[in-house]
Length: 253
Image 1 (spheres, rainbow, N blue to C red):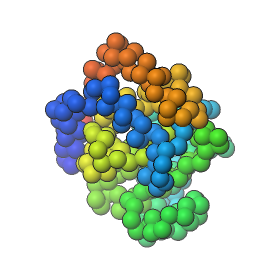
Image 2: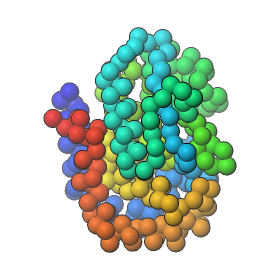
Image 3: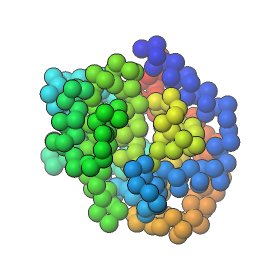
Image 4: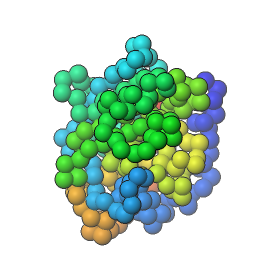
């Protein structure tokens, strides 16, 4: 538990010490990198996000339920994502469109094969957790997250897996070593949403942007959104907003 507290402290220090990410140009560049690209595909896509809401279900694959620590983190983070995006997100066993599979490392590859159609080579041995998303004309309609819980717990990765995969599933699918501070940066040790992550989610679900919008057409709209954010002090207060999220509060003790 001390590790989680230390990681939270590091998140806050990174946010506070390096304010270069709070420039509008940096936020815009970071958003383009994370929202319009994909770590497994070259080139740029179009804007992807959910439209009709998320109905999520937590399942167990050859792993004895319940694992309340993970379930509580998942519930809290989904509530945070819903508050940030204004997207309805509810837990539901009736026709879920977002499944979180909790399993063991020894069954990870089997779970990937069972619950996804991924063709990525060596994904089971080269990943700590996995996200698979599907879209229809760039509207996200289905997602699956698979977490080998014993592996994640052994290496202190459970919060990181939950936060990163669920956040990416909102429509921020890329990873980048230069976008910082962010859970989308695999080179960092950040487990919790940062001020920059908070702002990128707010941009993604701003109603002035539309699903399927090209990067080029989104530029003037995002400039307008960021100007509004600046005038409302949302950029200035983004770190504070991120610190007040449920999962940050849960792990801050």
